[in-house]
Image (cartoon, rainbow, N blue to C red; front, top):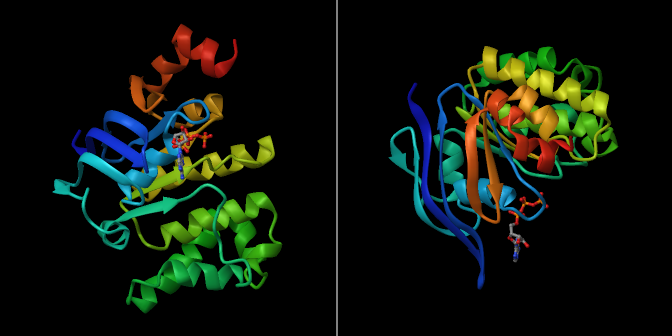
Length: 237
Ligand code: ATP
């Protein structure tokens, strides 16, 4: 399999504070990978560094192109969508307006209409609420809208930061089920940062574990789930 994203010796800084200490990892095209780690381990910073939203050094290559020095806008245009923690939908706009905004950099009007319909197939709850203001949706619905909006970019790679945060377990299962489907059917490569290790390892095919800004373990998600240290530290049994 070809590596779609290659990250080498990534270091990131917030002023004097170093948050990543030489991260190395890669994502295979078509994979669904989870990045696990405790609070403050550097998961969010990793996603932010890929999108060039934090000062960093090292090499990041996406589909063979170095992207470490490109602007966030440029990275997005190359096909990387970022769904940050806390959803970030436009609360005073309707569901449908949010989806249209997701496609703002595209000019293929007919395909945009088709894509919105496809999003409603993936997320039927959004279809029921297409005229509703995003700010009045439930937490789970807002998270679904954030993912759907990111998909309106037609990304090749989607970065998701703690999609399960604050959601009821049943909603998380539902959302993760849809993410798996999007990965398989839409061929979107996905990197998902999660504290809910159990669910993330069920969903993903590959996994990395990050501790204090360094990758300490990597492998196929099933093997990682069976690893004794991971079980004790992240799965609680
Ligand atoms: P969580 O699961 O709690 O969101 P995380 O693994 O995503 O944690 P990061 O948010 O990437 O962790 O933070 C990594 C380190 O960088 C932490 O030590 C954090 O305190 C520090 N950090 C993050 N954002 C800033 C900031 N804006 N200014 C200074 N330090 C920061």
